[in-house]
Image (cartoon, rainbow, N blue to C red; front, side):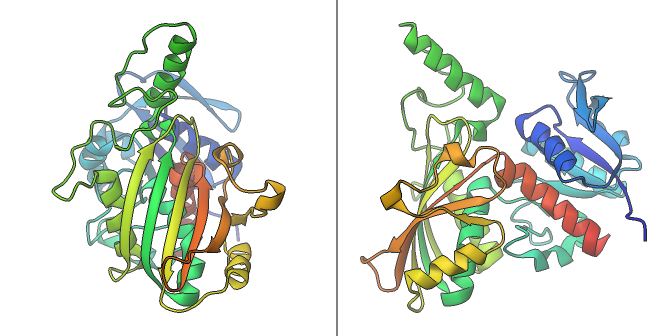
Length: 342
């Protein structure tokens, strides 16, 4: 039987994640019948290449979703809040990369390697939420360990690349480095403090802290983990912006309900979907953001016992935040939809 092809729209097509979505749709040969590249007035009329053809960027408006079957959104929360329901009303299934709908009880929050069964609920709103980039890579790495010995508690510290703040974050780091090498005072606009040769324990930019001192990025990791894996898992997160262009890194310590030997944990990770184990520190083998750039897999290393708690393990996890942390996960959801649901 001939594979069905779909009319696909990419919202925010000229942004960092939008461009990555187009590349991944092309790389994975997603069955696209018609592509609509949508963006704001600022980008209207630009051209983007897809499968060797030039596509003109169209203005994002409700009528642009007529005939669209799958809409991939990555243009900011305000845009998703306004246009995602409109796209769904016109017959599209929306896969949204913002935080707008993640905690809506009628909207599935999905990582295909973690909870594909949650896709069953897509018809309620015709919207599916992509989790936060840091949550995605953490849960891809932890799911096989959780299935084997049930995770009781997670303590995670993230070291997040500037591309998590979009093109403007990339540009600010690049310009600040140039300024400092030329003995100029760097301009600080995107991040709350200078990011070049610095680390900032506050994500997103100029974020307000809640009554417990947590940022919204940290709360996302807590709440999204509960929605996908169960509210009985205790999660403590600290999120830090670092002067790296691409690739989020995480130090994760877990406490399990029962013992899990490192040898068995290693085998579970080796066979887990979406995971690549790089773990021989004596030979200098462990994952870093450099290795993760352009990589679809979640890289795991420094796997070891955490002796500070009963049944404790520690690991280091790295992933390309623009790919698995955003665009790739969205396309994988679209692939599951096309295969099993549409």
